Image (cartoon, rainbow, N blue to C red; front, side):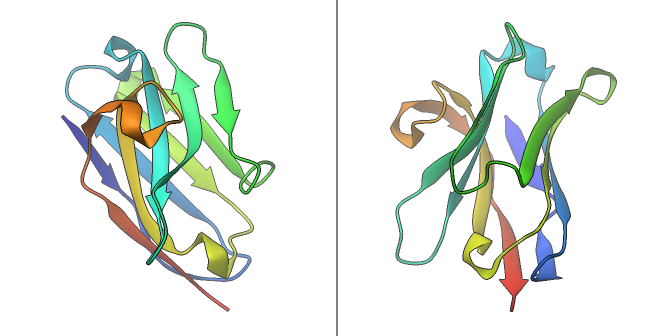
Length: 118
């Protein structure tokens, strides 16, 4: 099971760090990804971390602003979000599966709301 946390309300230009806690260790999963869904929009994959080789993926919309990383001793995967924009407002989820396609995820965590005010 996965559990996302760390969302909140932040002003434009601010930062947040999301955490994804996995039962067992994140290294037990082929990949951990972060997804988001804004009101009226489809869920999209924004960042992925491969457990096998540590490779990462970022959607163009977040590239250069978001960073995905894992701290193995804490068994957590983080998404550091900097320079946040109002268009980043969404419910954020972590999931495991064939990242970044939302339809190919095996397990989803509960979402955490991120709201960026202008």
